[in-house]
Length: 227
Image (cartoon, rainbow, N blue to C red; front, side, top):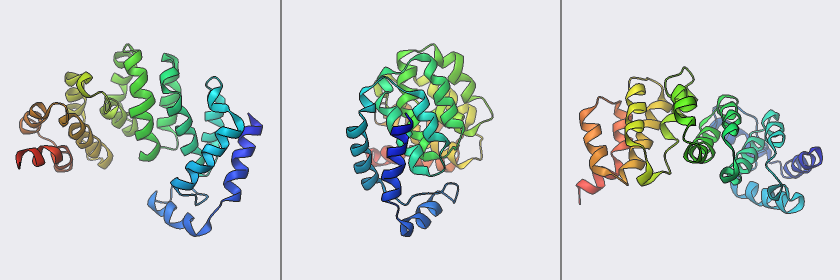
């Protein structure tokens, strides 16, 4: 694994772009250092990395993910998320512990959102027992990123969305002043409105939600109503 990490470090160091680092760090509110490698180039480098190492064809390596998570530059966490998402259909119930760790450390929307809607969403779909045993605690807990994850983990579920669960988690967090909670509520409602617009419209009308949540959640409804 160290050889694989070394190769990735080499690829990123060779493509460091100091001009890009400042705006990229500012975009993330100066929480993380960057190599200054933008997404298109990072995707090319990652493709090369996978081709040379074949790590994506091997069994899932938790240690590889954790090693990337420990590194400073944000591009390493982006690679870790990409790697985890590639394995989402092969993840086991116990892997939810790793997802919780990734959500609650070096937390920001770029990693949290991808983890919540892809690996967490897939694990919860394949092993629904984790919803009452784990995700339920997230929704009512103190960590804002876990609460956001509980609200948005069903984003890709469409007609399989557990509506009662979605609305209950939203109502439990509706009074939050946190931007990322309000935005997450709006995102979840907007996405579900593609599947069940009447239900979402009624929910918004019948519940007291933050203006941001209503605005975000109503985007597709407004287009539908204006037709």
